Amino acid sequence: MTDSLWIRADHLWNDSDGRFTPGLLRIEGGVITARAEAPAAPPAGARVIDMGERYVLPGLINTHVHLEFSASPAPLDDFYAENDEERLMRAMGNAHRMLLSGVTTIRDCGSSWSMLALARRPDLAPVPLPTILCSGPPITVHAGHLHFMHGIVETDDDILRHIDRLEREGGRSVKVMASGGSMTPGSDPVETIFAQETLNLIAEEARRRALPSVSHVLSTESIRRSALARIDSLEHCAFYERDADGMIVRRYDPNIAAVVRDSGSAMMANLSTATRALDAVRARGAATPQEAHALRQFDVMVENFGKFVALGVPMVCGNDAGVRETPFEDTWMEMAWLIRGGLSAAQTIRAATSQAAKTLLIDQSVGKLEVSLAADLIALRKDPLEDREAFREVDFVMKAGAVIVDRLGPGSSTPADC
Image 1 (cartoon, helix red, strand yellow):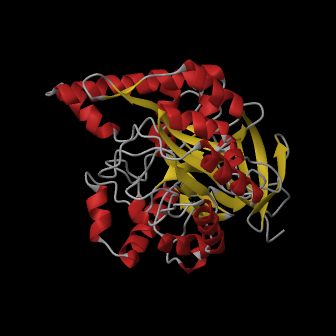
Image 2 (cartoon, rainbow, N blue to C red; image 1 turned 180 degrees about the vertical axis):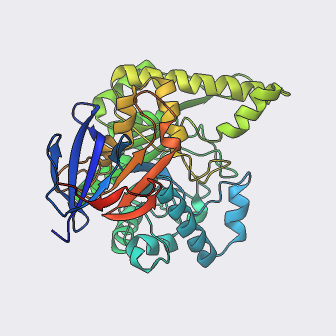
Image 3 (cartoon, rainbow, N blue to C red; image 1 turned 60 degrees about the vertical axis):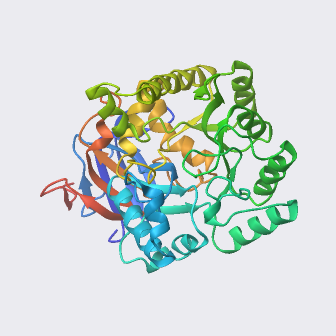
């Protein structure tokens, strides 16, 4: 039994029941090879990590980050100022910080081609990393959102060549910019970019290759088209339109929301993105009409999210980490906002574990504390079913059976006293 490690906990997450129960996990070769409920005990002499009263869950999955970005007030300026090698080093550091915060799997939702090296050869990194699923450069158009990442296409053949290269170089997700984006100068987030036939092609090609598809959808029509294409994950679902004064507003369309529900697509809402700036405005009071508008639109976003929840649309956890003032350690904040927006605590845990794994097509390897799945797990001090900020304090992180973070204190790892 020298190659075995046992995890013992008073509170072990049970995904199907949505609750914690006392139990044991046996870990061998980086995989969970047994799960037993209390009062079962590990064999005499086995190595045991005793979590005591801590809450043990699968490692978190963040489905939408940008590892090359800086999360500064001006991330695009930082991106332009750095070369490929510098961005790759930044990406490694950002990914490592996410792992330390309890995120054991991430999807990078837009990067330069050079970032794919990190997904291809994580073994070369000087620090432990989460599992990284890279989308590479998003499929876009000239002057389209994130066009500077070099995913520009003009024809169907361009799209097929793009996906060929993506898969060949280690990409594990296909991203399309179905609308414009606020971050890219000259790109209009209210504009819908690709025709229905083009989005259908992208989604069908991704399915043929067993790659998860993901679509950036800010404009109302881009939501509809991407849902009809049955893209696996719809990002933002903002319902952006312009009012009579030219201001961008969110106008929820129940008919299009029903199309999303019927499509089977999941939704990534990124409710917490850039909230630090909004919190500062709230604290001092809106000084301009633009700030007041931003606060109102944030409230509309949260309200719209609740409507999607009521429809039963599957939700996944992603926070756009790397964009303006959205740090890589803040997955916990997105989870707190998912609860504030209308998900139950158990649904929120699934959004960052089992549902996220299902949407990313990796649920046969991660997302639950079950036999044959990877030994990716975390332990919390507080009960996440009772405290929506419980994921802010992570005492233990294990990645593929390797202990990355251990704040359990002396005496937690011992031979079994059996």
